[in-house]
Image 1 (tube, helix red, strand yellow):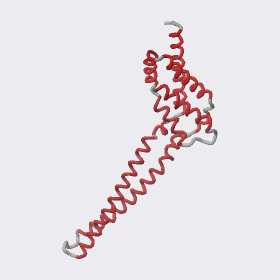
Image 2 (image 1 turned 120 degrees about the horizontal axis):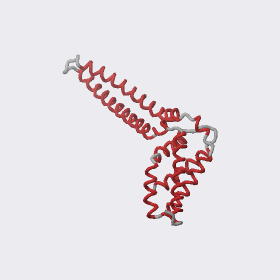
Image 3 (image 1 turned 120 degrees about the vertical axis):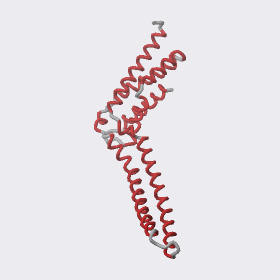
Image 4 (image 1 turned 180 degrees about the vertical axis):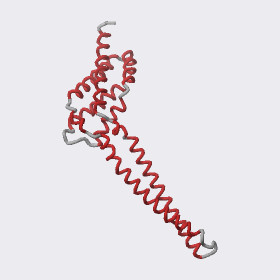
Length: 206
């Protein structure tokens, strides 16, 4: 249920903001902030869910909404000023740096192996096919090609790993603290409206 997920995740965000202090934000701490915004910024989905649940189980919706309202109030009461100085783009790039370096190193190794293989292969073209030198170099050429193929495959895997890590965590790069403030204020308003609507229903008001 989305409203319960939002409340739980916002509770985790509040714990993080209440405890991380002035020592600077790590990438691991920045990630849940950015993912919370990414996952729940479309509040229309929450409104649609509430519209269904208010007919099926208004009591449960009231409990969930009250919990959400409590967490939004908690968030908005916390000192979020230190977040304004965090460079989220830098955190993202520093996190990705080891992945990129591993790939670049593997790519360089593969490129050097290809250069050696190409040089051997080029020399073969000028040797008589039935010569001992050709047969010897051909065997070395085959071994060099196999070595290159392995290095190339390894580099490709590291590239895929790098891209997947980049895409999985790109929300950190795009994140701005004010996004979270605006979203939580919207959630606060939605939770408050749901609670008011349910109370009016209980009191028999239109």
